Every structure is written in C-alpha cells, then in structure tokens.
Length: 291
Figure (cartoon, rainbow, N blue to C red):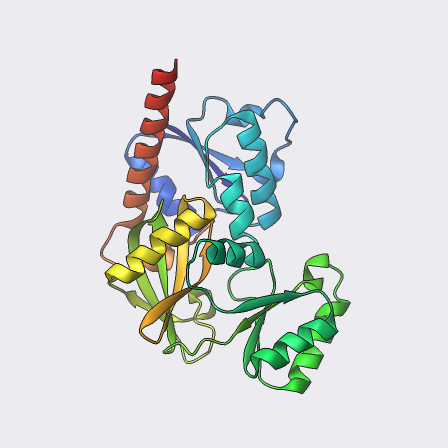
C-alpha cells in the first residue's frame, strides 16, 4: 500500500511507524504540513496515489482542518475529521463519553469567572481546571483553595485566546498514584501501561514511570465504548481506577506510543501497521464490490 504520513516534526513515534512500513515494503510519502496548500476541490500533488493518510500533526488546528480537507477530497485518513474534532476538544470529548454512557469524571463548563467560581465551590477543594485544547498535561491546575481559584481563573480570563475563556472544570479523582493508557485500534486494545508518579499529573511527558498493564474485561469494555463514542480509529484511551470501577477521562486522537512500546512486550508499531493494512484492504475490497 501507499501511505501518506502527515507531520510537522518527525519524532520517535513517527520513526517507529515509518521503519515498520518500509520494512514491509510499503511505499511511504512523508508530507510536511507546513509546506502544503489546500484547494477547495483539488488535493495537492503530494497526495496523489495514496491509499491512506496517517495524521501525525502536532498542532491541533492543522489536524482538524487537514483531515476535513482530505475527507472532502475522498482520501481515506486516520483518524477521521469527526474523531479529531471530538478528541481535540476536552469539552466535546467529555460530552461524547457521557452521551455514550461511558463513566467519566464529573465535569462542568462555564464562560465567566463568577460562574466558574460557583462550580469550583460546588465541587470543593481540590478540583481540576483544564484547558479545553491541550496535551502533555500543560496548563492544567489542581485548585486547592479559594484564593488559588480566584487567581487562576482571573489569569485565564485575561489571556487572549478565546479558548481560555472556556472554563473546563472537573472533580478531582482520588486515583492510586497512577492512571492507565491504552492504545487501541477501532476499540481493540493493542497494549496498555500504567503511568505512576508522586505528582498528581501522571503523564509520561511529565516524567511518570511506566510499566505494562493487563486489562481486565471491564477495562476492555470501556475502551471499546470510548472508542465508539468518538468515532473509532487509532486512539489513546486514558482510564483511572476509581474505587471498584474505572473512569475514562480522555481519548486522544494523535496518540504517542514510544513510551508504551518500551514498556510492553507487544510490538506496537507492527500491530498498528497490521491494522492499517487490514483497513486499506477492506476499503479496497468494498470499492471493488461497489464498482
């Protein structure tokens, strides 16, 4: 198959995918999105002859718009625009999970400092304030007091970007010093790891230690439900242990997996490419039947 890889920087994650694709003899076209221009009706020449495009854009804005253009051109893209649009925005992400009946932390959104303060006081301390768009645990705040809430909310309200005027507030989940990252392809778990840290943020990007995690049936069920809720694809599903159950707090659409690949016995890029091959074969067979 001929695969297009959208990127703005080639990280270790992309190198793992590229090496696996090339080792299997697939043709790969690397497409630097910073250099492309998108017409309303005709795709750039870089996309000629591609069987599938894999979106690995770092910037959320690029991911959302480029996937929309590709779908308009009729070019298969992983992940879809609909999935990217939901996963890129934490409020949309939470709504999709809640609509699908997936357990997710109690969350409220407000648009003024006064309304946000009311939510904080309702949730009690601590609670968590997150940007609606963002990754790697950046700009997240655990609010431990009224004075901290007032200062953080006022600070956000003065920032220029309209997204900072959306106050996304969640209850604080008393997790056991760790959370669970699952890489899944259309809801089927590829591998899972726990990310542990003394800090309340347990992102691998923040220095959390990682180790392989064996999913039980309940966790697998929630991964499938969460994937379906956002439209499926190649996803990172984040769960927290909450009492005798789990809660799904986020689904990621341009998921990083280098830390996961190092932590587990599964060959993650090989399994992802297996899925891509099956996906392309299925779409080509469907096209032949339709013709």
